Length: 225
Image 1 (tube, rainbow, N blue to C red):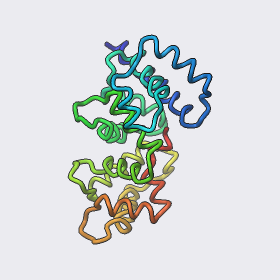
Image 2 (image 1 turned 180 degrees about the horizontal axis):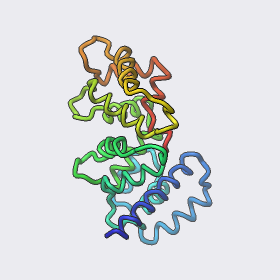
Image 3 (image 1 turned 180 degrees about the vertical axis):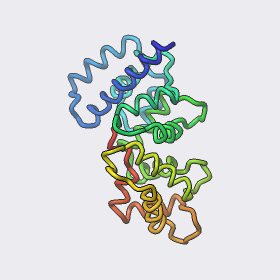
Image 4 (image 1 turned 90 degrees about the horizontal axis):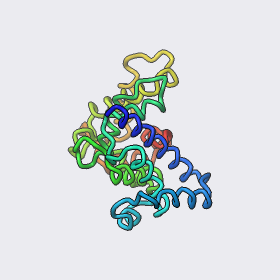
């Protein structure tokens, strides 16, 4: 079991590395053809045509990404513990466990405690190649921890603290305990237009579109990928 978990972690890391090359354009057509030839031998995601229609990835890209799941993790799913271990490797100087927890929940759209290939690809498609509004909608749902359609101060504080913990010493050499709360107060000052104590999706999108600094703050996950 431990061996399978280890292989699964390695496989998803390989998947992310392949995805980086696909997005950046450094994975050439010849390389895609080579990868695809190996992929076609054993691995073809179910509903490939449907996934291509629903995401911003091509068939060759989807097949390469699928191989990253099935080659190293035959179960085809990633649980939260594995996801946390993978994510921690991107932030060795901080504690990424809580942010990874919230991120995992955002990918786990069926709320069954695991991320399937479809869940992962749908989320990545939005974050990496979606429209600005689609990216902001996804990010809003990440912050909306209890899924009630609003972001309250407690939810935003939890996410902001998790981000600070994850970034570690690179974010704050000497962070005072009230700094995350100060940032939340500043966010709410700009976002909560009607001052009712919660932020709606429309308020969130409008505030981010009007403030470039806030936009970058809300899209931290893209920097990881």
